[in-house]
Length: 291
Ligand SMILES: CC(=O)N[C@@H]([C@@H](O)[C@H](O)[C@H](O)CO)[C@@H](O)CC(=O)C(=O)O
Image (cartoon, rainbow, N blue to C red; front, side, top):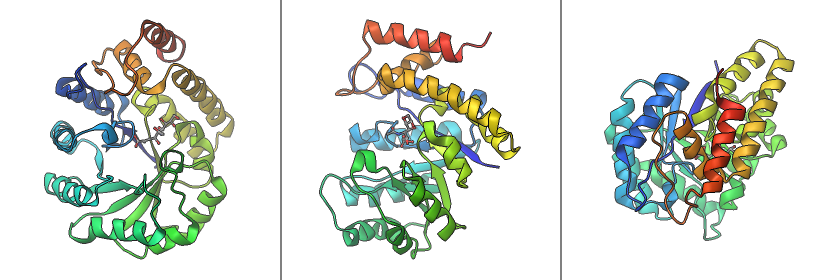
């Protein structure tokens, strides 16, 4: 069975501090209502790269305390500061996270040797397994098939969170590494990723749309491609509307329509405007309200 993970969001207060109660509500909703298989904690959607070190620690502690053993947990510890990544890898492993992940190092144009060293350093001293977070659209870092192969020479590197529209590369990676974990990262491209044999998906919109995504996975597994395509279209109508309404604040505004106190995004992320709020209400009514 393919696994569905929500990319956990962080509820912030207006002053940029963490709203713990709201973050716990989103965790509970994912576990109890969405019934996801796991949570990806500290990723892009969680606004991790906009947080202080203390806030990162706070979120990792909240998430595992709330989720306990109810779902699988992957902690994203990648950082501009390799020493922070190494520290967080140990911190989350000691908390009990069964998997860690790290975004490819970005901002400075690192060589592949430097990227390989970053990953090997992060896992060297921790008893954990690492999933590479590859997202070229945000990092500018595109790894080749042979580069993935070199990273996989480290047995503690077990897979890829593949947030990339290059399905030629995805097919090559899948067939060269049949035993590695590949989790698709673009929700709007879930069906083509399923067709190429990914093991599951991680994404922001599954916080709201998990029911459709799981139905799509089930339809695909049952060979009902027409139903899977219809569900992908319905999901992409929702995703298009979220993107048009500014997806990060909109995810939280729509969550509020579902009765979850998702807080706000942290500046410089956009703060809710009256137009965004109206747009979120329309998105909820058009794509998520159950009759
Ligand atoms: C750039 C970005 O945020 N991509 C999202 C997608 O879920 C994305 O929001 C969705 O496909 C809509 O474009 C995820 O891949 C990111 C993610 O899972 C994370 O929070 O780390």
